[in-house]
Length: 282
Image 1: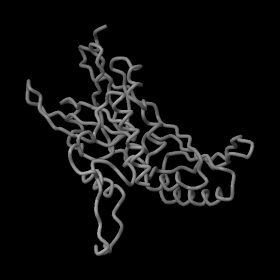
Image 2: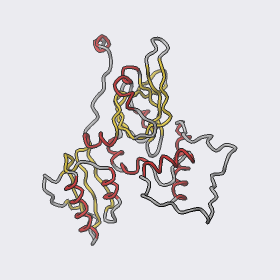
Image 3: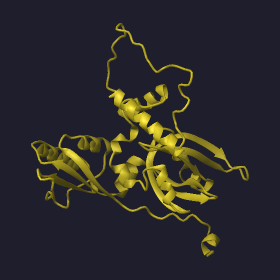
Image 4: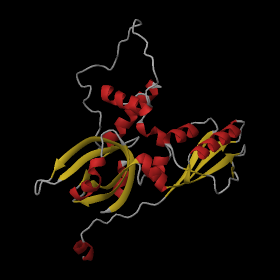
């Protein structure tokens, strides 16, 4: 698993360099350790409960500069692509000035600053998705709304604006919400695509447990892929709705019967933070 993670990280690093995006890991090992950790058979065994996944990943990032066991966004695989307005830096070239965007990721390189003119607090940070990292600015008015909620290493859903000036592209944050809280608000439906096999019945049972434990507003659905490659939608009551839980979702998505997802999210609400006199201009 660690080898696969290293290969995936290398591919991500190369893609980010080609796209001109800031690489979060550059220089961490320049002239230093090769990352090999020696162990001893005499090391005492550690007893106690297993470390939570997010905490383990945070330690890996702090100690090594990259993740080994996975990525903090792994629990949202499939959900993030439905929520995100774009998937790569190149996509930003197709957005006009003041286009509203939505993006999910982990906050890193958080820097709290003050404006030169009137000493108001603001922030600059990177939002790292599973593939890329994007720099955002939280200007004073936006920072006043959510700045105190920003934490390094936490997952968020961000709503913001694309800025274009003199051929340069910038990204500003308008609203930031913890991802676990934001997802249930914007998810309309999740449909799991299953292979028509003996494991499908077990998945039905697991999905029923998840819905019974966390009923909510997100409509759940199931499609079966038949041997001739056609998809057939299973009949499920309209009351079969769920409140998204990342741990439950990850478990369901990794079930052997699941071969795909269909996720429907609410559209991104348009942001217009211009002053009244600016809006009046033609």
